[in-house]
Image (cartoon, rainbow over all chains, first blue to last red; front, side, top):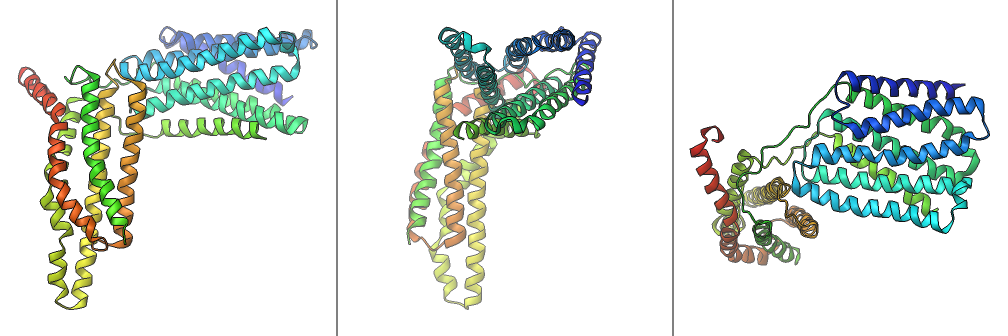
Length: 258
Length: 191
């Protein structure tokens, strides 16, 4: 009973986010994020009907919808690139390179899995494996993006901050719960059936608050006139670092002697 | 079990990253003011903290010899003061390294020609430098300023050479400041 209540509360939040997106005009600003939410809304509603009408076919469709939503979840990462990293070509390049590697991993993994064992895609064990691995790849990618944002001191607006936090918490909790469930077996199911939906509800709650209206990402001043070449700029930094290092390391080496 | 640890580690790593993302951070602005501050900080490093005279005075053994002729209490007080001074000097060095890193990141993120490998290497070097600072701080804290006389000799001997290298390496900042000055003349709101 409680799981059904959680289910409907989730659908309510999804609808609320979509309505606020339309009214607050954030939908046009973050189309990929709203596409993800719309997909969750449609799949949750349709799956509930399917659960009542044809319970036997529910697990298969549930898994298909889950896979689609995991892939559409990449939209949040796309929004991060578009709104946060694009004004900073250097940081964007760094995150893009890291992202490309991870995307290549995702699709290679899917392609190989489809080619090698197409039937296994419908086995329960394989489904769990695949879902968990896809979540892990997304988590690693999100971790890279967050690290780049933090390392380069890029400021985030409330919309993007909420988007990343909600998605990060959702995939983090699901990934960890998946892994523990896989290891602990059916005994973990009692916790699993509440933990995963509740963490998802928490993410929806974060998104509702963060996406209530449009908050643009704060932009830094454009770069002051610096050296046109990145190489000479790096050389400058390296030169200064080298000077400090030689000073300090020799000091430590000598200081450590009795 | 290994798989479980691996996936749990990814999840935990993500939570840690999100925690740091939510914490308010001093963003590397890369603005005109930041550039000016970075320049001032590096000037302080070049003319003050790294100058041979300052280093020599902090670690001067003659001072200890002179003080040692007097009562032991005064000698102990002197040693404590000198250690505090040396520790402050290392802390300032560390602060200036952090300033340099802030300046570098604030500017590098705008460079379309940024190289991932170079940035990763620089990040590692900055970490190493900051670690060295901590190590030096620890050595001074545990052993005191005069526990390692060779360190003092080396410090004073290399100080001038270090300043010369710094002068060359700071050329890129000087040019930036010149451009900034010209920009301020054209647009007074910058200053």
